[in-house]
Length: 334
Ligand code: LMR
Image (tube, rainbow, N blue to C red; front, side):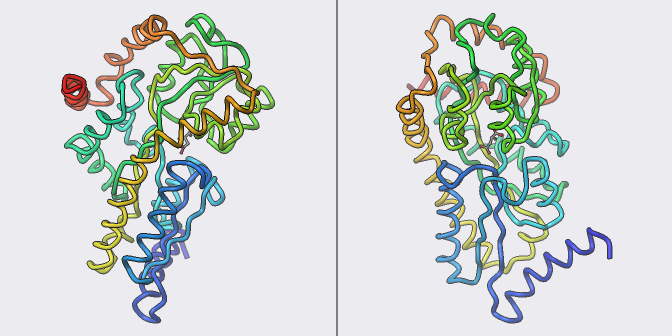
């Protein structure tokens, strides 16, 4: 029996199980971070709400920390129906052939999370989700983690400090361009492999939120961290389309409500999760944390601006302009 037929059978069985034997419908939610992160806590909250709202007709099984699949594999597993739900970073949809999500990787596009939340809550967010449907995937929500900071085993205070360093990135062409614009060498790598790669010197540094750095113990193998706030880690919560469309309507409604409420929860806790993680990194005294002065931050931002024009075609001029308009409106409101 071919793999696709098998996967189809698995999805049908998962749905059939519930109907025939009152067995709950099993929803496998796989992700690559620990439970003690904005996404990890969001997944747990979704499980609690989904099981409560469906009165046990749905059972959510969470597989955190790349237990089941690493970055690239998880999207393939979702398409095959081996798992039903994921929340990958929006920087990881390029390999699926949907590079437009990389628009969120343009450095220094967002000064705060409220303008980002407005963008994904509007037409841009919906338009991007539509691009996933032909891939057999339905987008349900956007979850936020935080702003990215650089780390390495040498101080990163000037653009020149990056020269020749190998920096780990997610699988995004814009992030590749970003690291090259810093004069460093980009290295795409699965999240679960980053700690060991830093420890063994396969890469010299990486960019991530304090929450991801702390929960993966990266601070133990990075002597320096610069608070550059140069980008965001944000997620798209996605489900297998066949599974989602095949659900009884009342169940789908319950799960949509559970997703709406857990999404609110994730955006509400994200900043504190990262502030707490940063405090723990500082308390561990393994990493010197450097606050990038505004003048230097402005120089880094300026060095990244050519990327906007270079990647305009791939992310869509209209999409880029729509985001820039929303961001401008948000800051005008301040
Ligand atoms: C990364 O690969 O650095 C992040 O996307 C991991 C995550 O899911 O937060």
